[in-house]
Amino acid sequence: MIKVAVDAMGGDNAPGEIVAGAVEAVKKKDGIQVLLVGQEAAVKGELSRLNYSGDQIQVIDASEVIETGEPPVNAIRKKKNSSIVIGMNLVKKGEADAFVSAGSSGAILVGGQVIVGRIKGVERPPLASLIPTEKGVSLLIDCGANVDARPSHLLQFAQMGSIYMEHVVGVKNPRVSIVNIGLEEEKGNALVKETFPLLKECKDINFTGSIEAREIPHGGADVIVCEAFVGNVILKLYEGVGSTLFAKVKEGLMSTTRSKIGALLVKPALKATLKAFDASEHGGAPLLGLKGLVVKTHGSSKRTEVCNSIIQCVTFKEQAINEKIRDCLAAAQEAQ
Image (cartoon, rainbow, N blue to C red; front, side):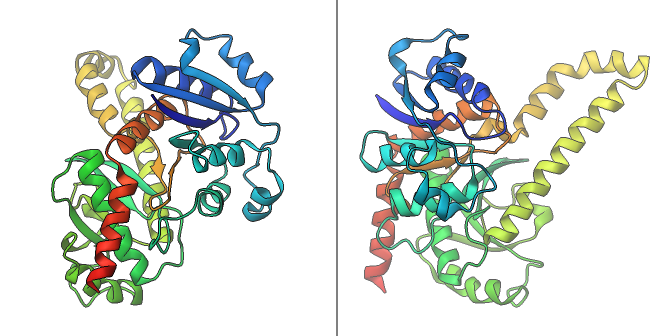
């Protein structure tokens, strides 16, 4: 039984959608036990409205909540009874295999490093988000953790991202590219120019050069490497364009009687296509390089994304991703 601790109080739609997502996860996947960490009365109140197997969900009381606007370091230090701190301590102590939260990004990043701890050799843990593309999905790394990364950090992001894509997503020998403003090796800012030769020389990855932003939706690479400032801009723009496009398509299909009739005919195919480009179908973003698994989901996450984020933890654990990252980095250091 894989145990996943879930921050029931984190995110815009907590605790209702978080609890509902946890219930969906245990119904969809056997062998999961969810530990809902949050204010006991509120969590049990949400559970009372749902049907689920009692032995697969446990409530762990956490009286405090870390709000999005709080300074992360102070919040982690002072709010020992918060759902984030208690959930991460469950992972640290081995009482949970993973922790999932839609709460404060800063607190999750700080807590992951301070409480769960980094794997030996990992310089900076990156957030790695799966994004939909024409060819399936790509891994955007880093998309929110390290806005001032160094070349050595980006090299490790590429190595960790390759391991994740191969063993969790099932992409053999994943193509790795670095985000750039052109394809030529001499282009880019100082960080990209310094990182490019490191990626080119690394034997652990299948480096295919630079990738321009317009090629990302076409699936031009399996692992897209960048520092978090660029990665977060790409991710947010991706989400914004996607939601706007969906809204405009719906508006167009409902604009006339003829288009409404056409909409009925294309609805099954269109629904399947739009679902493939729905980021919530791909779960949350793991903070790679920690001793335990921590997954950050969108602050606006609803039950589908919460459910998929929990299920995502099972594959991560079964494939021993942390152990593979540790071994890969240890071998790379020995070779230097």
